[in-house]
Image 1 (cartoon, rainbow, N blue to C red):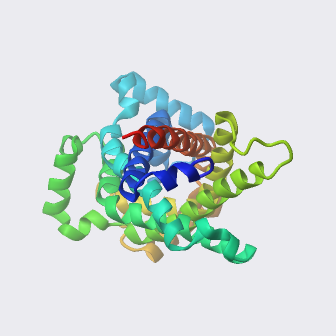
Image 2: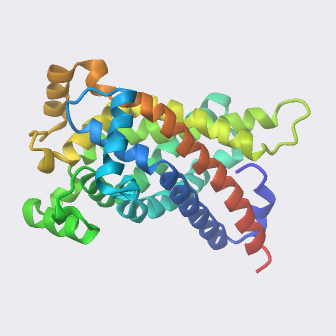
Length: 306
């Protein structure tokens, strides 16, 4: 990361990984908690055929608060934290490791095209790594967010019911569209963020290290790019994850794609709720990336003294 090369050279490999993991978990937890109500609203619209609008989204949030209390807007957030903390920790730490494996830190020996290609691949592999290792928790969060069924009230209950009714493969229902979607999402997000920081540091008069506000802005732009590219597959993922609750028979990627297109069209189906994602997504990614950089630099300074 920018501004941490000297610290990386001083720290042992083990301490560097510890710093990456802790900073990633902190960044992910803070970002996800900030946009949890919007996330619940988005998922609710994603899994059914109700047309999305800003008015309908506001009404959903209002009804949840009125019927179940303000804190109900964070229903499923415990499952979210149980997934996001390890997910973000693994994603950021693995991104640093994939950069090392791909030789991105030794960019002077690479052509510009090869460097940019490897930068995108490192981000994609980080997303695939973290998504694969934490996917059952993502499925549990989605199911908890879309139902008031008492059998889906806690992580333990979700896992028990899923295993009893669907077997082990039930924990990875919807994994394929998730896998396909995280490649452009994580790849574009990390690529854009790292490229913007590099561009900033090359500008005349630049101190080389962007301010927190600048990092938040760069993260927001990165999140916008990543989510726009992968959103249709996010719709498919949610439909398949929650099919046992909604009873819509979303058994396969192709079948789900056909059903969404037939019943809702392209804009109303594959991009339903995208406008809300353009609000919450950049906020979450901006907070996540900026927090990671700040916390990671802080932890490296602390660990370098131990």
